[in-house]
Image (cartoon, rainbow, N blue to C red; front, top):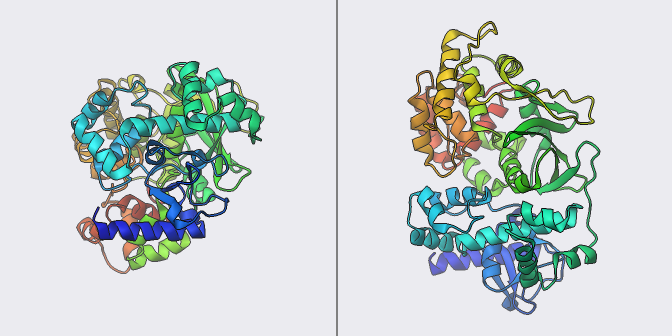
Length: 495
């Protein structure tokens, strides 16, 4: 970064710090040299003098510089670092893998190999874009997650240590004493934790998000596409079933009592998989989207500017399971969202496992786990209103996923994934781009041939996919968000 750009960034951070601008929460951290503490931009404490602060692009960078987390503003509750932070796609993919636990074993070389770079180059990229090494990012992530569980749940310290990826309670205790100067038990005892109680689930975790965030718009999207028996929306809550290592689970997501948070309820989820499910939920509901950056690019287009005014907190919904979403996308080819949802429910009812879990919400109709690739690779899929060509495509996709020829690994390049998916007979560019948008969370994926997108740009004349692709060049790297905005202007369109 040039000296001039660095100075400009410093001035922006200084203004945001003094204004306690919530838009910058989680995008940088403030190290206070007089106290040795690092804070969020929204910290309610008296603002220190400018000469006594340093700015860091990530919590891990502040920690590596020797600062400890503030117990008042709680950096662990800030929205997460967007997976596409910085300009490096390698960093973006690396962050997603670390968020999924790729460095729980501390093997940096293996992570670098998955990303297709040397470990030295990967460290250089992380230091440049995040100000910290990959291991420091993983350590801070685990620490923050554990701190939230200490404050917000009644889980035992042993379970919290396991959920946060610490190999032992001793390592867990040492990490907290080295960082906070107190043991985990002392921190829980000293604080006044806000327990999230929910009769429908034995465990709840709060998920902070970047604002603005329109939960009701998210619910409408999921309600229209909820696979009957597998997922549903009841009142202000999203519910679904999951299979985790063969064990059945039910999750729920709803607004938390405190503004700026969702409440994730979990039943049947082993604490050792808690971190993974929490990270998945963050991606599925796109909680860390850098809304200000997205708006600054897309607002330059007249049509998108109008759509942004109607939906300033646009999000790109993710996917709980890449295979399930791909099947759903194939079902949605050339038919309405409602019709595709009906077909998905029929497939789940016939081929999905019955849910082996009871939960107290009588109004929630969940009965099935979505069928696996092995189950569908030889499924007849007959007598359910599905045309023969679609059934054959689903079987082909199931076979290549079951054989490992197609994966939804975040480490792969999105364009390689799209090419592999399109090589399957019956899968076109629309389907591949749509799956990349949601399952791989590629913010620049763009199904330019979508009829809804073509109609939304100019209804007075015919717009071709080539015309739309050309216009969308100025929307990079946020074309997926542009697609969601345009679909939002045409109710009932889009996957």
